[in-house]
Length: 154
Image (cartoon, rainbow, N blue to C red; front, side, top):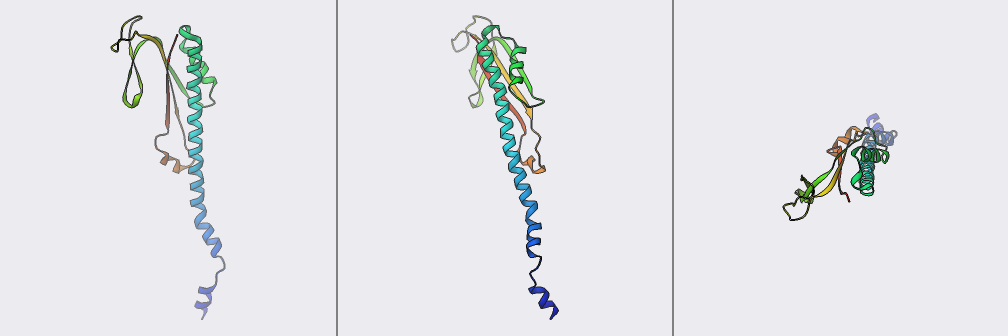
């Protein structure tokens, strides 16, 4: 008789359901927050590379690598972000895997394999290591972000 009374008693069921679902909801919310923050970080890294590329394009052939790095660092709040600049120097361009621009060192006025004349280019790359907020953020995969821009100087 007492057993039947306890079996039908529904007090505390909602508290138990809540206790079982809250950890799943918190993990899901944390994962979604990590995805959003990862995309925001990627946008900020892209802005840094774009700022450096724009500065290089406007400054022309007299631009220095240090000035490009400074322009890129000023455009982002990420810390520590690594912005590296290759060039300005004369390069022949080509197309690599996935349509990426490849650069091969050349001399001023040299003729490239494509028949074009070597141009003055600068390559700007930025790297940032994103640290997820939640332990499930490791499911995001590679959290080292890379951005690259190649600018022809005139």
